[in-house]
Amino acid sequence: MDVKKVLYISQEIEPYLPAGSMSTFSRNIAQGLQEKGAEVRTFMPKYGAINERRNQLHEVIRLSGMNIIIDDTDHPLIIKVATLQPTRLQVYFIDNDDYFYRHTPGKFEPVDWADVNDERAIFFVRGTIETVKKLRWEADIVHCIGWITALTPLFIKQLYADDPSFRTSKIVYSLFADKLEVPLAANIYAKLKEAGIEQSVLDSIAKDDAEEIDLVKINKIAIDFADAIVESSPDVAPEIVEYAKASGKPFLACTELNTAAYHSFYQSL
Image (cartoon, rainbow, N blue to C red; front, side, top):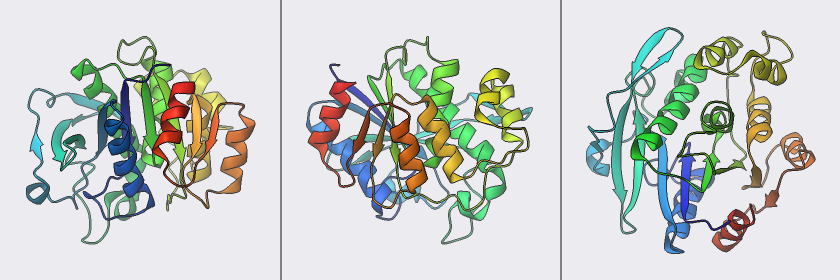
């Protein structure tokens, strides 16, 4: 396919969070594709630890104001944006006081306040998708990075497959040696059903309604609904890598960033 527009949805991006394998990868891959001439948009959560003044974040009023309902509760969606210098790469931040402000200094909300990680992931994914729709932007590639993005393939394929922004999109999911300290509670299935995911699909995901979602499980869900998989770092759990390979979907082992390899992989989809 002719890849002109690439959407990166990431758990963390340097320099907004400290340098690490995932945050550095997220920055460099987006920057690399932009330098190759692609139109790139990037999204990440607005964690409370991110200094808005230092990073020059500002709210995008025309994109904010929507409410996302989770577990019968309205949660306002706030969109902020910053420009990553010197590349002028735009980074959009999904913000909400309920999910991204209650942290202990030195820790992030998904670690320090893990009991709502199921809702946090749903809110982030739906907030990103709805914002892309508002932008009227049609992505050729949607590349998801980190467990908090892992529900994106499920939502796009089940609820947004016919939307113009995603109708022709190919969804790529990166495997990382990630951490999910506390499994997502089993009541996530009820929340996914409330969001519009059909019961038959939920039945295919879970053996029973009491099944928690740990790191292996959430990666398997992403693999099941993605179009292609990349092993983007070493030390990914062998069970996850083998599951990805056994899926029969296009698979790229590229544990060190190689922009040309990723661009070629995108073009092959």
